[in-house]
Length: 300
Image (cartoon, helix red, strand yellow):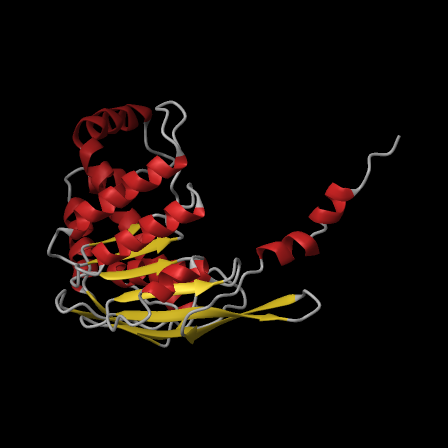
């Protein structure tokens, strides 16, 4: 039995050895009201803090049981936690736990190649894949199983993401400014020696393509100096990936989209080595009938 569980059970037993416990347990339907009133008064004075501590302990036990049941019911595996340095993230058969029919992935980072650059079309699977990595890392550090066949991960100080960036109308801050501030916070975290898992999804969407390219390229150049962290960046900017294609420190992977000459497309969610230059935004616009709707004349 895990040491933490044994410790929590002992704490509960110690708490329940309070002098009022036998009297409360002995209460029946026949217990007289004066006795109940007296016990109620004493319990409010003596047991309030104890009950609060017991609630916390039982909440922990409930959470641990849920974690254990999820691991067993879903046939997840327990990860191998490694020392923080050198950084390592190796997994086989990793999938997102919330998908009914997930696609599984194999990926491996190390101190020499700690940066993964993801490319691929819209909706091809980049964001879901990064979320799967983040969820697996979080579950591993919680001490439970992970949705994979194997996971070896170095102990991380934390997980940094930029997936939920928002503008702030009250402060007069645009979406792009919010993106810059999030990157500033990320940069400050990366100055720490202890490693982080950094998940960056489509940097600088709040500006024009030229600015986004320049900003992403400059940020990527800076990120490559921080080899004690594991970093994943997804981008639609094919030109950024090509700019760094000869860099041996970067792993390049892309999500495959099958496209036909008649304008149709199919997402395979398959992750392959290399760089994608797929562009299907206009095809999606056409397939959803947006262009046709806009060219229709209003009746009457």
